[in-house]
Amino acid sequence: MKNSLKVALIVEALLAYVYVSLTNGVFLAYLAFLGYDTSMISSIVLGSSFPAILIGYMTFRKPTLLSSVSKKRLIVVHASERLIWLVVPFMHSFEALIAVYFVKNLFSVLISLQFNNIIFSVFDEQGVRDVTSKRSSLASVSSILGYFLATIFLSAGETGFYYSFIYGALIGLASTAVIALPDMKIPLREIPAITNVENIYSVSLYQVLYVASASLLSIFWVSIIVKGMGLESYWVTMISLVGTATSIFASLFWGRAHFKYYKFSLAFDALTPLLVVFAKNSFMHLGISTYGSFFGTGSGFLGSFLYARYMGSLGPMRASSLLIMLGGLGQFFGSLIGSFGQEFYLVLAVAVVVLKMGALFVAFLTIPEVALVPGYMARNYASILYMVSVLGYRLSIEVSKESAIITLRIIVLTVSLLVLYVIYKAAIILLGV
Image (cartoon, rainbow, N blue to C red; front, top):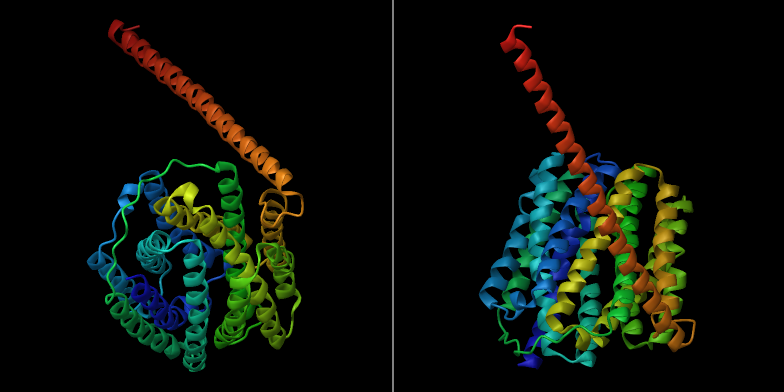
């Protein structure tokens, strides 16, 4: 069962990422083509982050919601996400695009949650690394084809978006057929108590900061290409094509690399946003895409692989839920910053650098596997970071409670004075004074 499931998951990625490249991969370019600025694009992405946060939180708090995976339910959700892209090219209004992208991401979250649960439950740490790296590598191969087709389609102008979304949705349905083939039996496991809280917190903080930086970078990079430099939309897919080709080799390299080498990916990845802003030639962006993709792949793998290592401390159901929730939080914070940035690209680039440097410092100081300090110091720093965060959270809760109580008292006092005033006026009228 494991082997057939592993093959199905890998082949599904091979087909699904052609679909992803032709749909989600051109969506930001579509928004920029319609004339939306960085702020409005960020607002659309911002709204779509809520399903991941809410559903991830609910299933993390109550893992029994994921105790089983229904193949029928997975197939329905899997197909529904593909079908929704058929209506996207016919929508131009801001409100409609927010709504449809919200629903699309709702389906995406449910799919990812069930896929993560399957992978984390069926396979051990080495198996998770194997499936993840192979899915990523083969996904990159299919993404090359997808972005190549998207580049050809978008060279035709607005009509190209129709071709891209419609053909992409149809190819996506083929991946649904593949995932319907193998048996999906999740072994029943006792939900463990959470341990290694400090390490999990550090990795979670790293993941949020990294995803936020990646989300914001993708938003303002598209705006720079289409609106800032005035290039055609197909340049966005060309840049994605080059980056995806690079990620094939990057996935194989980082999938086998020891954790100690990930510190280099983190350091060099932090420079990518500044290179994007100061590159004035369109062909320079192709080179930056190669650079950013190689080191960004390593940075992205770090969080996933560490969760595979700490999975025993969370249990597979909590691990998959937490990954989804953290991805949503990262997207939320990244797009929230972008919604205030408008077309101030340098400011947005600095914000991305700050987020990446934040992730860098968290990793270098508190995650023992990649820390620059000795392991015992990293664990101590992780404990301190966790305790400070908990104290800050409790303090904010207490302050919020006090503020709420004071506000409530002011409201009650105001209403009481208002009632007394009304009674006073009524008495004057009745007495005829």
